[in-house]
Image (cartoon, rainbow, N blue to C red; front, side, top):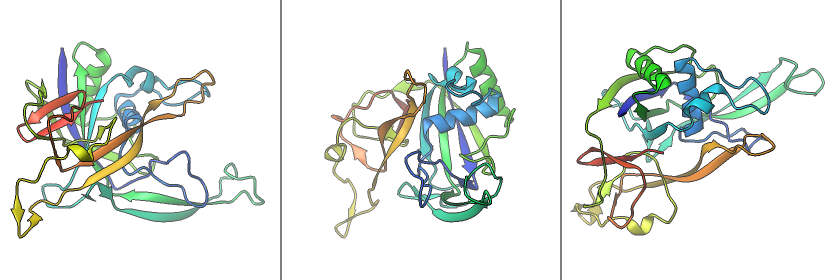
Length: 265
């Protein structure tokens, strides 16, 4: 039996480093991606992380098949805005690493410049198997706002917390019988702009709600290849407030309410 739940996840800062960037600035992904989210869940439920080169961590092996949905939070109950059209605010931070292990330069001092997200926030959905013991423990910890290890967003100084644990009853697959919105990130295999529905509300020749389409190429899993280097495998993701016509059919779409669907992947 399956059970769909969600939590609202927050951090003061976040740095989800893009592995293909180095000098002069380390860049961050803008959106939370599935491998990072599984790491957060692993900390919450108490599963081990990376310990040995060439060996996937316990949390990933045990949670990689968990279906998740990720929805950027627009604003909180106090009206605080977290992102603009899918883009979270960012800043550049420069600091010294003087541990002596980060650089072969004389003096062992490495200057690092990083792009950092400010106040990222996401509603995260999980489709749990109620007979799975690990999923049961995860559900219990999420519902009780407890974590075995400190979860963080990319760096251990960027701790995360969550609130608004929710359960969803009678969740159904979307049947594409009408135009629809997707509230979460979703991955695409074709151009989606041609499937955007015509606006239904106009005022002085402008749409009442301005449309946006945000695109980002994000990790979806680790490549489990022979060399065991475990590089990211990527997918093309979209986040938008636009409505789509019924001829765009996205797999694993769940109905959350009459106005919104999400994709689980």
